[in-house]
Image (tube, rainbow, N blue to C red; front, side, top):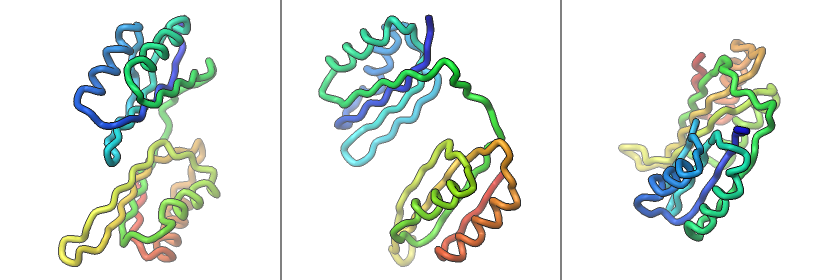
Amino acid sequence: MNTRIILSIIGPDKPGIVSDISEIVKNHLGNIEKSRMIRLGDFFTIMVLITINREDIANLNNELINYSDYKISIHELADTFKDINKDIYTIHLNGIDTDGLVYNITYELSKLDINIEELRTNIGNAPMSGLALFSLTARVTHPKLDYALLKEKMGTLASKLDVNIIVEN
């Protein structure tokens, strides 16, 4: 019987890791449905949603463990898991990098009972001054999201933090 699992892998970056991991998944008749992969410093992180026969999970795990010294984690999703397309809103934050920006925006979202589907952050240098500029992009959902309220709360937060926040629907 097929089930869905989340596979996460982290380890030293090296050429070919994505090809190697995807081949191992394919060899165990797994199908990669969604993935997020990124190099962070000297490490590479992989997170994938896989459909696989429940009986093949242990063999997949054993082969991945034998692959290398990467940290491997497999989590089976409940049969009731549904990946329903909902209204997704995008929030963009840009400003001078200061402590607590991720906390402040995620705390405000949690108070509104808004689910974060994806969150990306980055720090770069301003072209002229060289100041550290922080950017955050969040994709969020809520079954009954009040778009006007979200924009209002993000506007208040932007003023408080002295950053620019744009909400797109």
